[in-house]
Structure formats: C-alpha cells, structure tokens
Length: 223
View 1 (spheres, rainbow, N blue to C red):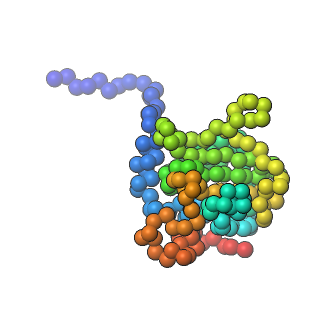
View 2: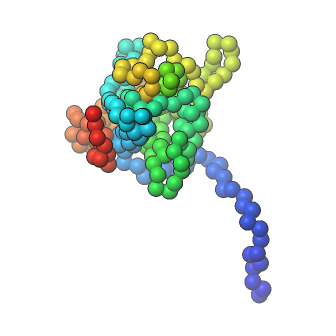
View 3: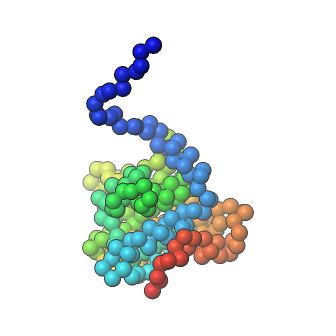
C-alpha cells in the first residue's frame, strides 16, 4: 500500500469552535467553585501594576449601588488600576483568549477570570471601568435561551443597539478617580445573594472572601 503523501503547503485552516457555551461550561467544571475570587484579584493586581506608580487599592465589598436600587446583595471587586475603555472591554472581555497583554502559554491574560466567573454567574458579570476619566459598562452573561456566553445588548436612547454604555460621573465609586474598574457578580439567579458562599460546603463561610481571594497572590505588595 502506498504511503500517504503528506507533502503540502504550510497553509492551515484554523480550528473553529462551534459551541463556545458548551466549551466554557466544560472548562468551568474544572475550576474550583470559588476560583473566581483568586482570578479576579489577580486581574486587579495586574491592572494596578500597569499604572505609573504601580500602587493602588483593591476592595472586595457589597455592590452598594445594586443594594440601594434593588435591595439585593451582590459581591463586587474594585481596583484603582489602569482601567479600560468601552472598546477595550468589548474586545478583551468578550474574547476567550484575548487581553491587553501579549499572549503566551504561561501568561495570565484574564481567561481564568472569564471562565471561572462567567460559568458561575449566568445572570451576568458586570464590568464598569474608567479610563482617562471616562466610564463605560458592559454585561457579560449566559443567554438563558441559547446558552451562549457573550455581551448583553443594550438599547440606546436613539433606538440603536450597543454592547457598552457610558457612565455618568455620579455613579463612579470611591476610591476610583481617573482610572479603575469595578466588577459585580450577579450569580446564577437575578435574586441570588452572591455575598454569601455559593455552596454550603465552603469552609469558613463568615470570611470566605477574605480567605480565598489571595490564593496565589502572596507576592503582591499592598499599600
């Protein structure tokens, strides 16, 4: 039997992913139930390290805006890092393997946070970010009808649709001034209390956030 003729050009048809929702759900199953605490903290540290003085604040807290408006407890993380524009959030957050850093096999480019957080917050993960004094918001969620992960579409006052909306200065939280990001975890159900541990078997339920948020981040110098 003749051997296969494997002498061809170097042109390659790129691999395609037909069902990203299924892929993310499978990848999410491999994550620890609260791995998103560590991943989001790491992202916040890296955002601060990109500022000129490489110092800043990271705060895990209740999202008091949601509580005041809806009476719901939602967990949030805030940092005073470099922040992102609307265009950057749409490009980086909605891409499974893309970030502002050069992609490498060993580099952390936000994939862990997207997988671990999005797959355990089907109602959504809100990113509100400020850069050069301008604020924008996006809503990463799992479409309940199709099971697709991606950015939720907003209707603009002009009747057009957009995947990011601008934020007024009066909704910018302290201590963010000219730049920084706030991420809000909405849970799998709109009414879910995400400040509480997501599972009953999580150790130290009264301090689960403070205990697990810094796993793998002990080399960061806090100020």
